[in-house]
Image (cartoon, rainbow, N blue to C red; front, side, top):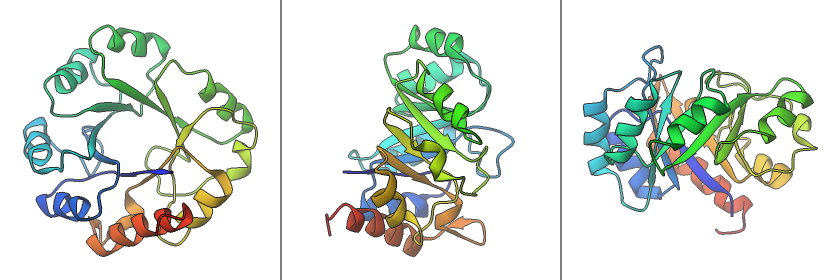
Length: 203
């Protein structure tokens, strides 16, 4: 069964929307450059309202290892997603500070990019077209990949079903694809979750 991650949550209404349809992961963005950035205090408030059945993922861009570990070990988030230039050395240092799982994001423009992602020391890899660009990449570049991955980039209610049926990713990750006018749309979130589950034959 393909897992589902709804990323970039910033309001309590976003939490209510995901609690209603129970995806597997909810993402909080801690990168100051993102329009979806939230503070640690806001993230703690949102996490407290999140259903215990949903894993909270913190998204970081070249953040200090210590800060990431504190948020993980303090229970503000359950997993970390690295979206910057973090290498295997950074991942090993972070693993030395926490036993929580780590996702490493990779931008895929060529088959070699996918091959390099496979070698990552992270617990999971995420394959994207860019740093939250909201655009899909050429899925044919993933034909040779032999590692489970999160698929991101340009996903929406309209193509989620095809993505699952064609690629069978470990998980699908969506943010802008479930927004209206820059904010999370509860109807689009519900439709996205339903599309993925329908592709998996769950509903």
